Amino acid sequence: MRALLAFLALFALPAVASTPTYTAAAGSTLGFGASYDGEAFTGRFDRFSADIAFDPATAAGRFDVVIELGSAGTDNDERDETLLGAEFFDAAGTPQARYVATRFRKLDDGRFVAEGVLTLRGIAKAVPLTFTWTAGAMPVLAGSATVPRLAFNVGTGDWADTAVLPDAVSVTTRLVLQPTR
Image (tube, rainbow, N blue to C red; front, side, top):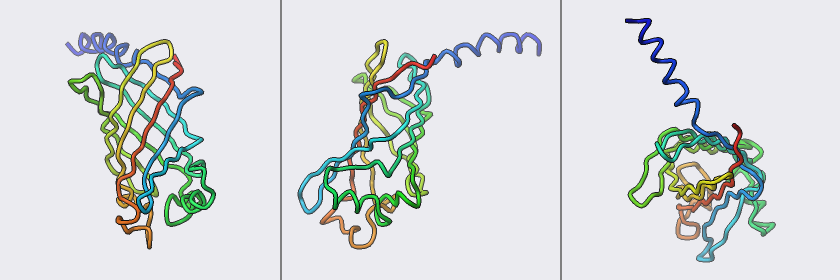
């Protein structure tokens, strides 16, 4: 019986191994948006890597995204310097953030939710990412999430005042995916 189970297990392995895998290709973006004193602003991370394994038919896979915090930019030199400093991203002390998801669910409208964990400034918290998946030779994953910045100690000291700088930061991504196998 044990030999039969071992033999049958061999046939189950290709299903797991056959989940398509991808990396982010040219044209991929990772952005964020918030407001300061009532004025909206947007920014982006110019350097990040994404290792994606996802099968939309089964809503199964793995996301592993590493973000270089020092690449954050909003096209405003003063704001950018502040964002990279110790009170916000602390890019010198913790140069990377990471988002990892291994649980997914499909919504009734065809979108998906990645039940992932964001690690930022050494703090790990659940952050769901709602996304669409557009199939093709180079699939496109387009998603959004809301990150509570104060839960990650982003914007400490005088910046913790949510009347001036709200706690909720919107994050958007559009990954053009290059197959790796």
